[in-house]
Length: 103
Image (cartoon, rainbow, N blue to C red):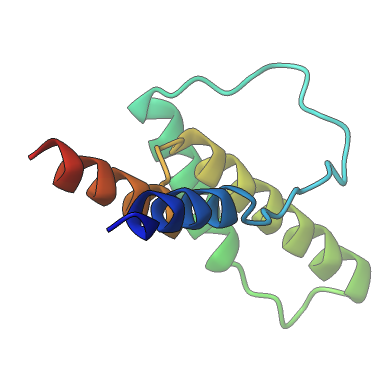
């Protein structure tokens, strides 16, 4: 029974040092931040559908590359709008352990 607190502390410390990926900004940040309005999300989704529906058979390589860049940029903007709360496995485990100790 004396080893239980040591075991719990060890698990918490090991899980708190979980490596996370850090994404560097590949391009310059946008001059205007995107608001989280649903209208902005709808506009971006419509533009993405429009880009995907283009006939690329008659385009040359630079035009196709520009379309691909715009699609990637639009997808990143759509993903950045949906900022949510993400919990790692370690955080969930710590929450469960705290709940068990409290109850």
